[in-house]
Structure formats: structure tokens, C-alpha cells
View 1 (cartoon, rainbow, N blue to C red):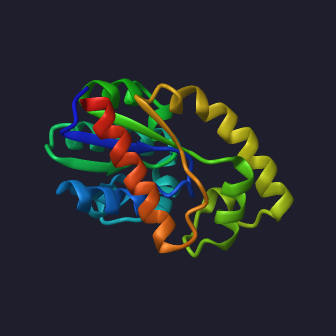
View 2: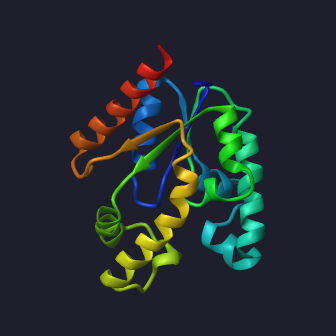
Length: 180
């Protein structure tokens, strides 16, 4: 298992970016949020790229970005929720690094996304019931890919900074155990 690159995967709202930053700091790695990487490269938001190019073309840009970060060393990459589910992205991540699936129950994801300040077009305008149903269906489809990760880490409910730190520490401990 290659530990020069650690990919955090999972559904939106799983805490990949928050935990990724802390994990990178703890390990002395660089942190990359793949969506931000794409936005900075194309000078457009993910929403704009989706609207202008459509999902298929966006997924090609995402795959290209994954290839680029798969060449970097000592990096933690937080992927977008759909990144592992297209083309051979999951295989690329598994071959070029260590993948960690941040597993969160659909009910908790729904709760987090309802209070999130981040704009997520795919769930905009959904009622709490519609959101919970959408997440359950969508997550069931994506878990076929997510569960191919080297490590499945069931996160708790990171609400406080201390709990987020505990999640990052837990992942770091699991990585260390797997590597010894």
C-alpha cells in the first residue's frame, strides 16, 4: 500500500475536507481538495463547470485532475463524492495511494447537509424528507465504489473541533497500523 498519497473518499458532508486538513497537518503532508484544485485550474466553480459542460465532460476534467495529483508525493486528497464512481478512478486511487472511505450513515449526512453553509446544487431546494430519501438512494449506488477502499472508517458525528480531531487521529492510527 502506497502511503505517499492518501485519498479520502465518501459522500458529500462526510467530513473529507475537514478531516483531510487535520490529517495532512498531523502527517506533514500537503492537503488538496480535488474540487478546489479543479476550480483553481479552470477559474470556474464546480457548479459552473457542470452547467457549462455537463456531467460527462466535468467527470473527464475530474479524472484528469486525479491523474495529476496521483503523481504528487506526500499529499492528502479529499475527492468529490462522485470522483470514485466514474471511469477507472477508484482503481487509479487504489493503485497510486491509500484510499480511506469515510463512511457516515445517511441520516447523519442529511442532518449535516441541512445545516451546511456550502452550496451544493445537487441537493438545493430539497425538503428534509426529500433530502434523506435522495441521500439514501444515491449513497447505495455509490457505496459499490466506496467500499473498494483500502480502509473503511466509520466516522462518528464530528460536531465539535475535538471530535473532528478524534476522527483525524483515528484515521491516522488506522493508517499507521495498516503500514506496520
